[in-house]
Image (cartoon, rainbow, N blue to C red; front, side):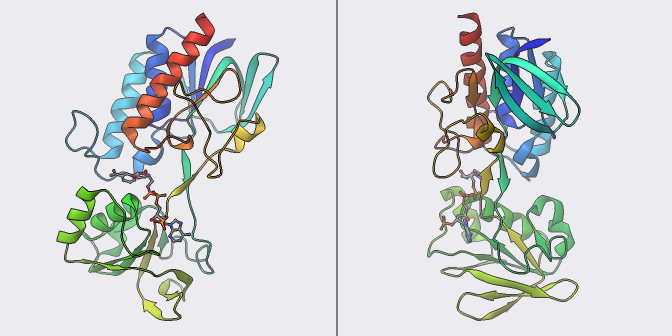
Length: 297
Ligand code: NDP
């Protein structure tokens, strides 16, 4: 069978694309290793229209139920290859091969690493990239969050509910998160900010015990949460020679079109100026409309 559209990715962008593909009556398939993407890691979402507060995982459950109600099939498989043969795309997964007339790439991003000595050694032993998963293990401990934008601040606020003391360690002189988050940060007495500082080493014995700063000073702590952004998952896009910018983001136009006919992209992996669940879902819906227009003329 040749689908009208195969959507790769199960975050807000992919699920938004699936809802609109169904509404455009496209014969669609969504393939994702895991449903939810980074939204799974959002402790509390307060900027989804019409929902004042919801856990990221609760929102995702509703998105998935919506897609299932519209009867878009979802395959929880890992995509390993993407090829274009004549005008048909072939998606290879760990379980099979699927063909389509168009593709919507919505693969999101993967967390950026600090790349300092000790980081890999202490993953799961004090180094974490997921405060939602690990915050509770640091009850009454001293932890640091590395980073200086929204993710770092959200992580610090959540960690402060468990830890004795939370530090945000930022390489520049002023945190650049959303004003509403900065306001919450300023009010939280458990969080201290260390600016103009980078970490050069993570050290310990069985577990993390300290970090070394770029000024040579040692800093004792029990846990480090790395929230320094993420990098788009563009390996598959590169297989199709899709144009990416200097930040490895897929270049799209207002219709979410890439430089390759029949390939659209949406969400955090694109060069869009705002990376939010609500904008990702909107971009997914635009991508579905563009796929529809291409197929149905
Ligand atoms: P960003 O890429 O926006 O920020 C990464 C932060 O980490 C920056 O402060 C950056 O420093 C710092 N950084 C990057 N690399 C290094 C490094 N090697 N060493 C030390 N520090 C480093 O990522 P976020 O995950 O914070 O946000 C991603 C997107 O998601 C943004 O668009 C954000 O607005 C959105 N978001 C929104 C939330 C919300 O509640 N509204 C919550 C979480 C994310 P520098 O400032 O010097 O570049």
